[in-house]
Length: 485
Ligand code: 5AD
Ligand code: SF4
Image 1 (spheres, rainbow, N blue to C red):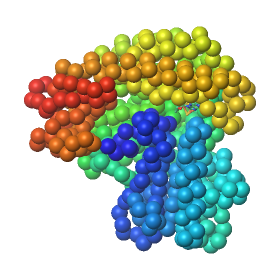
Image 2 (cartoon, rainbow, N blue to C red; image 1 turned 90 degrees about the horizontal axis):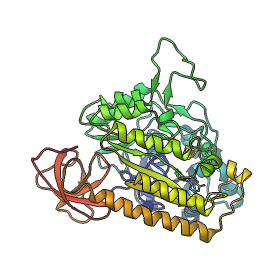
Image 3 (cartoon, protein in one colour; image 1 turned 60 degrees about the vertical axis):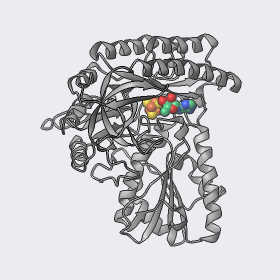
Image 4 (tube, rainbow, N blue to C red; image 1 turned 90 degrees about the vertical axis):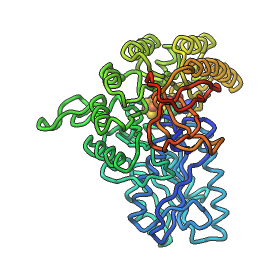
């Protein structure tokens, strides 16, 4: 399976096992210089890499999957937890060795590690030639020239405007069926554990017309599913300032629910997904828009982080346990069927055994389809680093995390099993990893289904009767019976 299509919400890959497995990207070999690009971390980074490939394509670079033939190596990095940074450093040391034999090779760091580590990567450790932050990608061709002229090059300026709105991403490692569309950049939420507001800057939304145009172009090119990406899609806004004032009275105001509807109306055969929702901002109109359009997938990633209101307050999440559970009730009320997944952090500053028990009990009441679960990792500059002590011992964090994972395993398996015995509409995404005779695709709930190919085609919809499952995958057969959803 293509790691790109299995990436999670706007911060992290879907499958923990994929973390650290770089996605190597390729493109059309019309240009003379060769770019080798690896992406780490979240969907947003994968999406950004497609913008970088487009900018460098215009500057005479084609992408290669073979690092040995590269003139330029770029790592698009993640800083969300310490282990993500460690993986990148290990990789950079390997490229530093490669440079001994190939002194012309230019190595650069993009993404979230850029701002924080520019000095140490460039000067102290001398691991890279080039450091470029998430808002400075248009400058990469100049910076590469600068490096080739014998200088180190840096641009980590963050912007209040940059959305790369008119750049057509070069689709990388694509299955030709599913694609990401970035709808906003940055984050203003300042969750106390999170480094993203520092690495990616202020929140800004992209022009809705350019988003709808991109969705159209993807549909015309044969794509059948788009995932709208933002750190907090529920705060998407166009033509309104941060105080809620309309900027241009001649133009319509567009918020997330309306944007999603506009994308859904591109074509009924274009599925729409989105990530990430924020419990404090997810309004009922988003849920009503989902209910109204069959092609908006019935799946919400709604990170809870903790089930205890005091911990949530220290996390600066802007909601309580009760508020979160009310949002879950709203989802269930407005949509008869909707899968829900979450993110949970174990062992945040000051978390007691009772607080941890509250997280477990909240999981019991929601019964998530899926969850991304992490031990708290203190990040430099964050509010938590400045205000709170990282006082839960490592073994305790890890034990609590294991308890959370074990509980989620039970819930996930039960949720999967409950889907058996029915027929679902499935978008065929590609050939199954395990057998050439089989395809895999997804239901609207984002559940993976494997089934014999018969005469189906990739990028089309088939109805699949599900008759069996493992804890995470459904099995079935194509049928002429009607789908329940
Ligand atoms: N430590 C552990 N997990 C974190 N996340 C973000 N920052 C940290 C951190 N410092 C998790 C949150 C977030 C997801 C993308 O990563 O759960 O939703
Ligand atoms: Fe980080 Fe919170 Fe913004 Fe997500 S919403 S990117 S967790 S600050």
